[in-house]
Amino acid sequence: MVSADNLNLDVLELIFWYLPQKDLPSVALVSRSFFVGALPRLYSNIVYGLRQAKKYPRVKSPFNVIVARPWLATHVRHVELQVVPKVKIERSQYHSDFLSDCSQAVKIAKALISFKCTLSLFPLFLEALQEKERLHDLRINANLTTNQAEMLCNIRNLHSLALDRASWNVMDMLPKWVPNFGSSLTNLVLYMTSDLNGEVLEQALRHLPHLLGLHIVGCPKVDHFTILRLVEHTPLVESLSLTTTETSNAPEFFVPKLSNLKHFALDTRYSTMSSPEPVVLSSILKVFRPAYLSLTSFVIRVPGAKTVGHSFVEQLVKDYGATLRQVSFVDCDLELQSTVHICTHCKNLERLALPVPLKDLLTFTAAIARSKSIRTLVDTGAYGNDHHSLDSRNAGHLMRNVPNLNRIVSDKRVWTRRGSNNIALETVSLHTPTSYWFLPRES
Image (cartoon, rainbow, N blue to C red):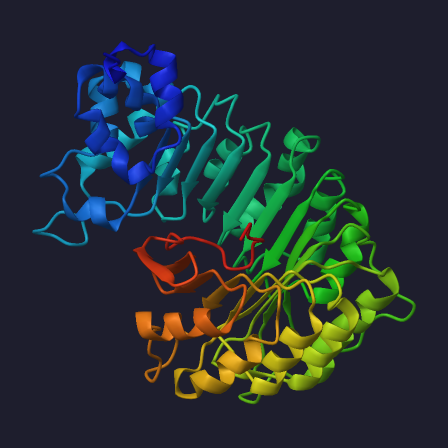
């Protein structure tokens, strides 16, 4: 008789790598061999969020377990700290024991590859991150003092760096820091950084010729045309995100060097209450036109639930409709005629993200049914008091009337087509609270 307990440990480990993360704790309790086989995957990726923090200290944190059994630290590859538990009696006070365990666990995790912490408590982990030769992916809240910024500069060999709300101290150090990983860094994100200016950005980008992803979002001292000019230092860039301003005057005879660009994200910010000024958005497309880009993914975010002008959509489709596979409209509305235009002329469209108008679901369904290639529909309309999420009846109607649609995402619910008449609903956590909306997606 064949038993799973008789399988070699390396075979069990390989099998468990294909199991869903949420099932691993239950699998580990089946037997001792299953427990040992599941350990590498259980502790490889540690994401500590609100659900876990609510149960602390009644339920121990994975960091406490690692400190108590240091040999488990050899399995840790990725750590993401989303929430730090607070003392119930004094809600403004964090659990000191948790912070101590977390810092110690990170320190002894010698094989750590990725660390993400966008909390203001990040400086507590600076010492623990020193001498991490395998650390390649770093995302942090970079509001640091001068001494802390100097410690940060000791981190080398990064492949991906994301700095949120960086202080002037960090921005001042950036041109001196990036040469430490100039030959290895492929992705750079500078998010909501008020002290970044064009001069500092240019000095940094000069050292990053191998950059594939550049995302400068929410940095008011750097306008979009400055970023488009500076990408001449990063000719290999495939994904680009930037914040537009009300400056509409593009430099004359200016063609950005973006021959490899596939993904483009626009974060529009305007001081007026009206819809986005078409001249500003159109001027960016006009600048791109001589570069002969082959965009496959486009994202635009317009705060305030404003409507994206149909003229802009027409120009976007005219220039890139033949190559676009993913189109997303975040925190904004879209005219029905714009939806029709996208679904009619984007022949390779696979993923469409936009607010789904439940009151006009019949006409909306007819609009997206014009696309014979769309496979995934994402409802991004989770804003405003009048918004209502899709339900199973709505999802069923959409899938029955849109030939190739096999996946619908709304909030934390995902409907998938299984066979011709069977539609399955799954509740999942698609994105963490710290996910960037502007990064390219696989599906």
